[in-house]
Image 1 (cartoon, rainbow, N blue to C red):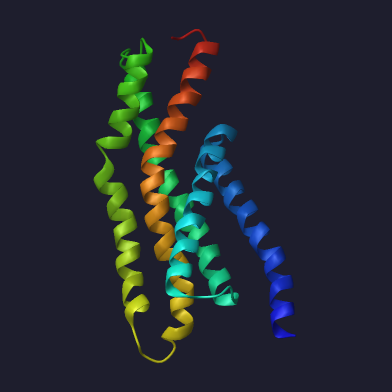
Image 2 (cartoon, rainbow, N blue to C red; image 1 turned 120 degrees about the horizontal axis):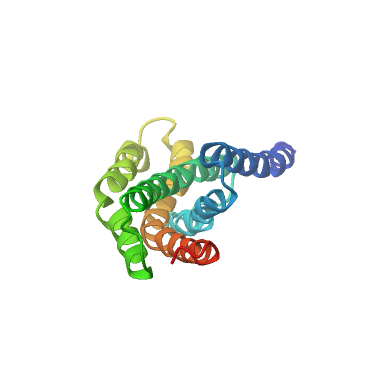
Length: 185
């Protein structure tokens, strides 16, 4: 009976959380395509969370669902960090008049994605370092907390790796299309 009530609440809370994340992204970027680009990190985060859940032998529970909700926010944060650096580099090159071809756009994406890997990885690493004691702890209460932390740790690994690859690629394709429509390239 408790699980049925919890599942009913989660069936409302999870979509509501995703909508709130999207709304916050839209308010931040004031741009639908950039908000959608960041939202693409969420499925990649789920992949790692599910894998670690399977590896640890955890079943779906309320604690696991809470972990996945927290993971959605963390994945969005990682995507925002990547997109902010890409936008910053794009704006700088454009203001300097250095954006003249697709090769320049490719250089912008490489600079924005690769040259700033350290801050992105530090953002994820600090979160994971905080969660690892929970994952490997054996004190009272860690049994439940491990189920919250497991999706977050697994999802952070997969979303970080895939965010470093997927978001720059999508950003490049989006900018190529928008610049060609503006006849800027």
